[in-house]
Length: 530
Image 1 (cartoon, rainbow, N blue to C red):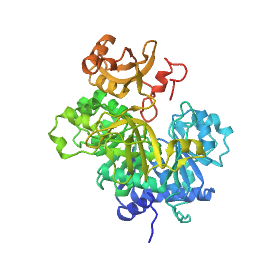
Image 2 (cartoon, rainbow, N blue to C red):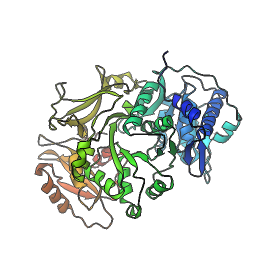
Image 3 (cartoon, rainbow, N blue to C red):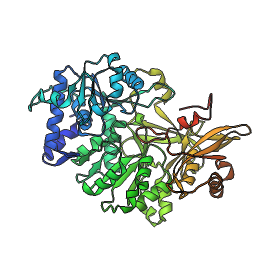
Image 4 (cartoon, rainbow, N blue to C red):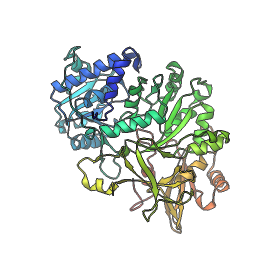
């Protein structure tokens, strides 16, 4: 009577019960669940005919298109593992990942094929499949995706595979900064449980229309690639983050749910079109990737009417391990107080396992909102380990617990709140200063669009905080004004000692700040960490 836990079974269910329901919208293309199921089955057949078998790895470098969605199901239902690639990486990193992952084939979007063209001669791939894009002219020696599917015709036939829920479903690589990218082994069971959390805690229903603003390559779209299919919801694809287009899609497609990093939220609320847009659907938006400032959440809810939901996790945990549960008693609080609560990472989700904050003595910190410790977790969603790297696996998973590297406190109600990444904590004259706390204060200033706070060297204190600010368009702000503003709103020793104004901050493909790149301008030696 045992049935393995795999998110692949949800496609079977969706095709069975919602065959004529709109499954995927990708620009002008629209596919029902029956059509989506047929295309994924044809992809599986074509891959099988090309030699892909259970246990093989297939790399995929695609933006958020229907091709990417098809790849998740078409590859994995063969018992093979998908290796989602970040299309913003350079050729050197892509070559390392493709080789290290033992990928036998690659599916790539023509628009992003440049780095692959540079390294193609160094790869030993059995075949490259290219998704054609109008206006692009790739030099890759590959077969066209649609021709690859047409080769098998309309009748797909591939052998049914008996899935082990603990086998590899996807191999997701972390971004390499000071070291090589690590391959995170995520299983069928882990993806299933994470997607179940996605469904339950984000309130996903059959009538939801989900906009893929979050890159699907990032932790499998946080589980959205599986969860929306599970309930027969509608996937709306988005090739790239384009704020005016997103704001238009809210009304055009009746978007009810989306996910994105705080920087994406910031882009939306600061787009000129935001003040002109009347969003009647009041979409729910889950945000994670970096601790969001309460002021940012407040603006998103006031300006766009978004219902913000804060979640937290890592690629190594599939990724969700905490969410900010909204309770009825919070409704009586002011909008500012509500936003402060929503900025917390929150409590354990229902299906992931146990998460807590421990001090240097290994014991759980007091629930007083003050004692600082590291977030650790164990349970259903933790990775199997790092691919071909037992040493880094052992360093990350100790005594059955995964150590996140995030420093946090636990409030009296059990809500966990991150104060900083261990590597981003500023220790000035023996005092701990949270860079996210300083950022949270600065985000309340009307002249600040984006901000990053880092440690810089100081002869007297060892290190002190510095703020790098992207000002609002037309804002007339000065360094001393920003410093004084911080001193008026927090302990003086925490205020930045210097301010720099810039046009943009360095970010990853998923919108996460790359503070290590900012630190590199000021540090040489031990403090220059990723």
